[in-house]
Image 1 (cartoon, rainbow, N blue to C red):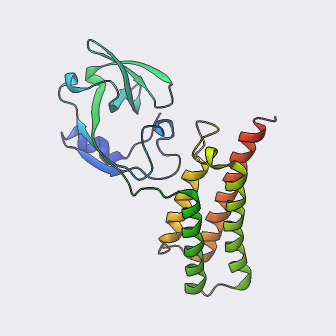
Image 2 (image 1 turned 180 degrees about the horizontal axis):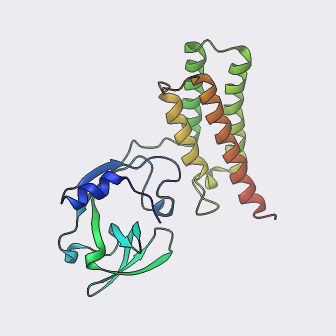
Length: 220
């Protein structure tokens, strides 16, 4: 069952449209091929199910909850609900479709991986100066960039934006999330330096996991 912000349901129930920006991470994981990080989506109430078309992203009543998925097929007043990864959920009636996405605004274009790594390195240098980082912490931040460059080379450009599993973000997506966090270093956390070190190390760990899945698959 997909998660959704409560204000979305409140707006649709009131007959109003709702606009939000898709965040990073696993949110809408099963819709990751249809929704990108940073896209701004507007969902409008469905008054006439006849307006719904195949391919529309919709919010539907599903058992005791709701699904934020897509319409894969239409037969009379029956709508086949699927996710963006090919999984078929089942049929619902038009009355079960609460809203559909009527507008998508694209996010800031994502740079290439080499450019992102340069931006990340520059952001870390700025953070080191602003926070008066110790030599050890500066070394840790530099090591993050070195490790990510190493994994980028090992993965190869053809796999930067590939997902080894449907529940894993790609190397490029993880790196873009980290780079934007570092560029926006005003994050209100108690120890910003340690926070960005931890985020960077986490991204390196994800890169290692992605490489292992591509190269070795499931070894259990």
